[in-house]
Image 1: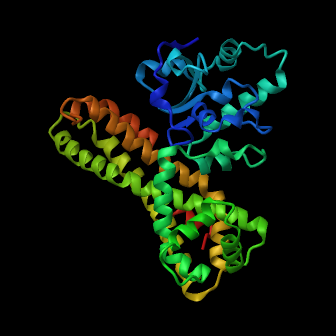
Image 2: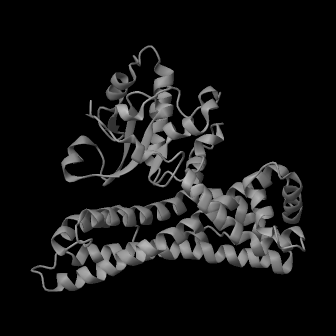
Length: 377
């Protein structure tokens, strides 16, 4: 069993889902009655208090997994759920001995609990396949299960910033969509439609404006929140992505005088993949604004309604794009912070960039934005 004591769980606590970390431990602290939910994510109590982390493999860890990818999923189980300072056991979900590890770590004989054990392994496998742990992608990952929605709660810090972003975004929409004349509380009122199910009157006004039945409106609100979440994440990563590309330009100049130019291929591959992903995301955002403008200016809800209903089907691809770019910038900035001067030099880049090129890779013949391919208009 892989173990590490002490494992500083406090650094992992988010109180919810974030692109890199799914903090189920913190969710139970945030919602104490989640332990009694009839619709848990996992059947085993211990797994419902775990941490899941998207982790970039170090070279000395590759023998621990069966995966062709550099990004894997780490499972961290607190030794004592009441004391995060007691340390934790951990493994990779991609480890070849995962099931035996779970039996030992959870203290459960799978032969006595075959159905529950197998279901939890399937849940871990599905979470492993997710490119990131953002809440909207996670919820779309389990369409056939009626899970407690609190498992998909956004991390506390992210939630506050996202709500501010959504309120600002809704400022110009609310007057036309809800017919309000006062601007004092306008953003908060329409944001409440997305974030507060109790704002019944406002929700009904918007539902009628979009000409949606109650069931479709619920899907539409989820889709709208998800789109705004990804647009917010695009804003969050923009500065880090620009800094990373500046570093690539500097390293490319240094590489020009190096024997055999070891960074030429990975830099070219990374730039192309970043461009493909970012252009895809921008196409989706621009299409959203076109549709919203048509809804507000012409009063025709058809395109808006179709966009919101189709949005959840796009979360896997959008989440992969945003998750990959987020990983790229956070991983790069992590290694920059490890250097005293805050700069990654050419020698170290020859180790980091080839792996990052594989992590962020996209099909190189896939130049047409996904949003246009699927006819979301």
